[in-house]
Length: 116
Image (cartoon, rainbow, N blue to C red):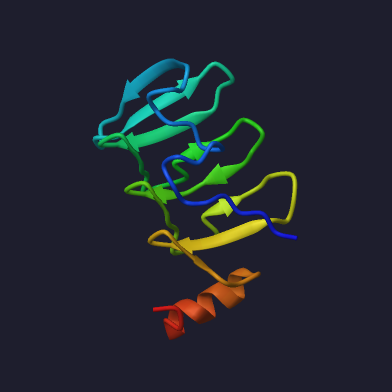
């Protein structure tokens, strides 16, 4: 059974920025802000939405990684959701989950644009 978080701002698994207990916020040169919580987890924001183009927008200290663009799960060159302690991965583009199980299958679907 696969479990994938819903891609919504109210999802309890992804902290709302206002409610998160931040240790520090760092303004980056590319316009992003990086919040770091007490555990050392990192969250990247642009205009208060999870966003990062050059890496995961959420990096947990346990190794889990989540890619977002403008608040939506999004990654064109790999899975947008990667769990460090399992083989579970989930591919998303523009907030839409792509039904595949491997990188090879994802790349084939991207070439075909079968999900558009």
